[in-house]
Image 1 (cartoon, rainbow, N blue to C red):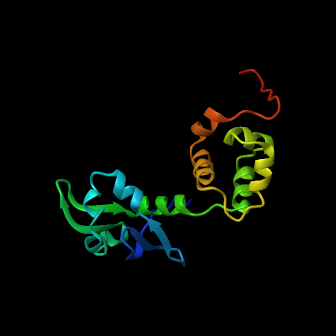
Image 2 (cartoon, rainbow, N blue to C red):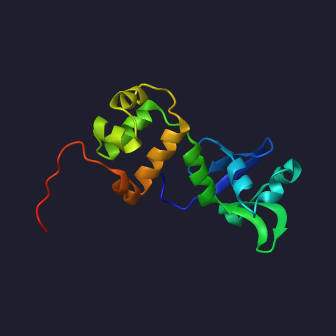
Length: 166
């Protein structure tokens, strides 16, 4: 995940609820499925059954977001580039190699990763060989990596950890 300010340099609707977006500093377009945001947000509900309006998406505020020609009581209907990039990152498929990087970045043994995700050690070893992990595993891994408190709340050491007294 990148910490710099997200900016959209290109956006186009693809289908009824998906966007093809390019962010500044990136060479490739990303496809974002916006169905969840539209379905779960009162603000975006007008786009649920209006593909023509959804297709009118446009870059606003020098790339800091995108908007649609719908007025709400809060102003124009828009979403920030930061939110779009977060959605894009969350929707990226996770490969076995990505999973291995995640495990190493968090310093987890196979056993610790298995306990953390609620699966067996063999399942973890299988994940390392897969082209695509189940989306729920990718979601969990990203949440655990992003928030150290979520990790701490669910982490069980694979071996006894001794720490000096405070």
